[in-house]
View 1 (cartoon, one colour):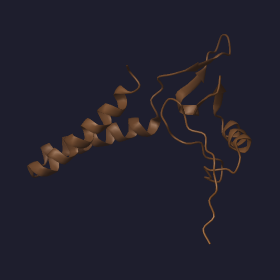
View 2: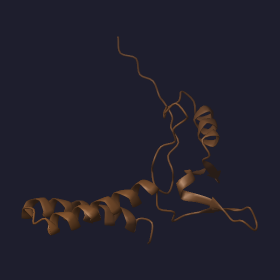
View 3: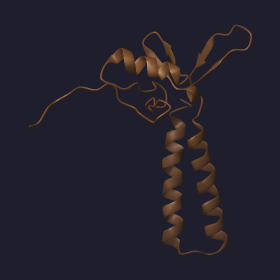
Length: 118
């Protein structure tokens, strides 16, 4: 028997990642539970929009949330890693196809960065 069910998840309106609880669970059977789990995982909700901890911070003076262009740490790590790979590949005179592969990945990462700096 095939049973169809609807599940809900909270997705960051900035970087598009989905909220996970402490067990790594993403989907929930109702909207309110998915919202509760996101808030318990330090997500912020503002006018029916949701932001992960990487994409908002609080202003130290007013305690008001500041949403927007925070670049996720994972993207920064990928950017640094691919830059190192390109440097090492050129330095060690690896085949052109390997360098080209690294450069293409670097271009994909750059496009992701551009989403945060429009």
